Image (cartoon, rainbow, N blue to C red; front, side, top):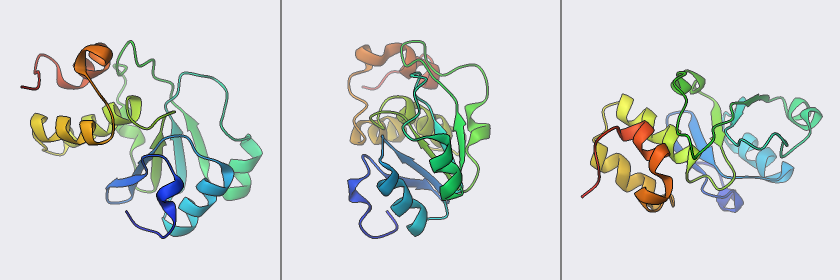
Amino acid sequence: MRGAGLTSLRRFAEFDRGLFRSGKYSAGELKLALTHNAIRRVVDLRDNPRQLLASSTYAKLGVEYVRFPIDEHLGLPALNVLSLLVRGTLVHCWKGSHRTGAVVAAHRLHTGWTRSATWDEMQRFGFGEWRKHERLAESVFGAWRPC
């Protein structure tokens, strides 16, 4: 993790060069993350239409806000969510573990990570049991299952 004092952001991490992940945040936490990292875009994966911050707050911070709602009970949409992951992007959901974990996992698999290593990382970030998020996990891994 780059930047000092960022531990207050829930599950914040740089998962690839210039790509970041987290759970929900306050305006102060986001400002701190922007100050210490080259984040220019925030992608909100929550299916709740309420923004965490007002549009004007994102504008004042000089960051693009993109809503890409994912229903964690349906899985990742057929649309290419990986196209959202350009350098300088923070992708987040409410907890930073399920929807965010699935998007990061899809990126990991796309960049050559093994399914096992990808699943292990999802667990470190709190994804939890396969059966509790089966559709989301299947949308990333297909027929593969962890041992």
